[in-house]
Image 1 (cartoon, rainbow, N blue to C red):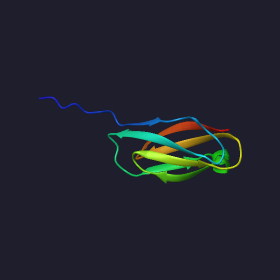
Image 2: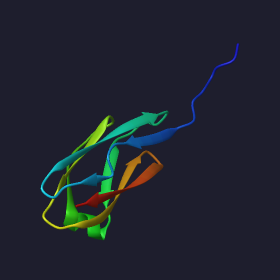
Image 3: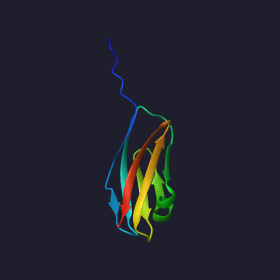
Length: 88
């Protein structure tokens, strides 16, 4: 018999823009990876967004007052994925 294994991956779906003072939710699909989900923002992103919730199924971000583009990095185990979020 053969055992089918899936390649470890992190997939992020959700909108890539958000209005100021509003929230956005990114859905995560993590396969073949164990460990906690860690979310980090770049230097500009820390001025634009705040991480309100992060788990294996979704990440919720709250936009602050400023406009601009932020880079959100989501890590799980030794894998990572980056998504750009535009604050309008």
